[in-house]
Length: 489
Image (cartoon, rainbow, N blue to C red):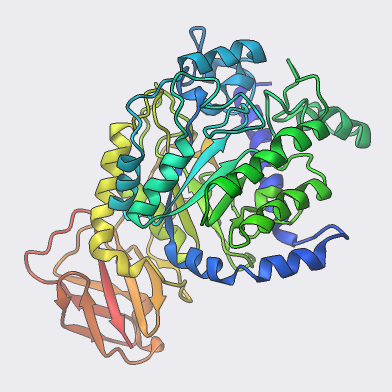
């Protein structure tokens, strides 16, 4: 099977995982109890829908090999997606050999306060960090496993606690990612063999996707749940209070009872926490269209939703991946998603030393400057009846899609994205304006316009016609990354 056939199959499976929750089909048990728990989270949902923009952090032992194992890049390997945090599966590294990475993990340049300040400067409202990824290594002080940053590394600092506290100092909300279904160190074969017995017609790819089949731990998957996964989630909830989000991932082969248990464990300790749909079996609080995926049609989405994206083409640090999103591209993703009513959580992958790559820092701060002026059109807004106008159309379907295609955006002065807040409508451009600009969607059909303002410059002259709104742009106004027109009705 060639590389692109593999990517196609992988993408189709991700769609099944991510989009499969759309139908809201729940197991026959626990439905009423789940509905009550979900309904009690209104305050967090309201905050989430207003926040719009957050930081994802993928960090762990995989930042040390950074996409290369024994001289071979992960892109040259046949197994798994080509993102750095999957190196253990891609290279089929034995568990005992992989644990040796922990002895090298000493990120002395890690500074939680600096990372939280970066997110704040970037205009982000929350941070979610990988407390345990698929390799099973925990970035916090776990009492039920010694494969964690305190017991297995020379660093011996609770990374999750430091970042949790730093976020509170900056006024940011905090959440954690936890790989509940996949644990290559202690999670046996992720119920692969059992699932195959129940469905012998599944393909070999479906049977083994994400599972440790090269060196599985000798315990059962149920023993992993009872002795590690459930207890670690309890530790996270008890040790780091006042969280807003828990990002479970990869519900492949999860049973309804298992997904419900992961939900209730969180609710019983921190009932305000909202949970990603990747918990599995319909028990999620909010929808994830897919990694680096913007849904074309959002009318079918009934839950709050969030697109997660990378700053290059990997989540964990990948030393040779220099295909960085520009500030303009990041702005496009944010504005396109917000105009459709969603949130954008943009990832950074620190190096093995704990440093956020300089290109990520530059991009985030540049977008942050734009948001400092124009954030009124982003935060606390809702989608309008039209989300955009103009000739440019960009469809992004997955991380692999972005890596293969690159970014082909050639934005024009005719491209505008729309949001609304109260009696105000916003038209967002990400290119420099001319002396006059025309916004077709703000024609007389929307009602009489009382005033027009360029955010950051003040009120301007305008003319509303049956066909469009014509806006006079102030002289010497030359914003590199675009501007916002605010219309009051």
